[in-house]
Image 1: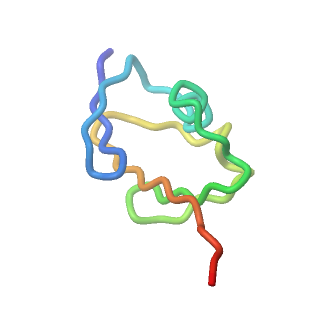
Image 2: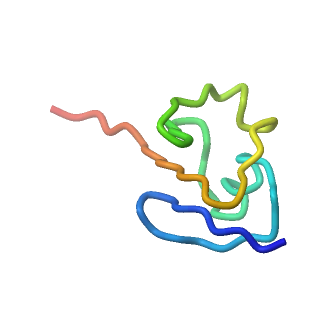
Length: 68
């Protein structure tokens, strides 16, 4: 089943549903320094493997930047 997911405001299509971890792997995103919001809720790193992403879901993927 094809699903549409909004990631950082951009619509992307995947065959799914699938786990958040798989989306990050396909996008080649290093999860070590990543903050994820799923449909307005912060996601703990421990949930990345189990969290199922479905059609119409919204993700915000943010990498904190240190500086000064």
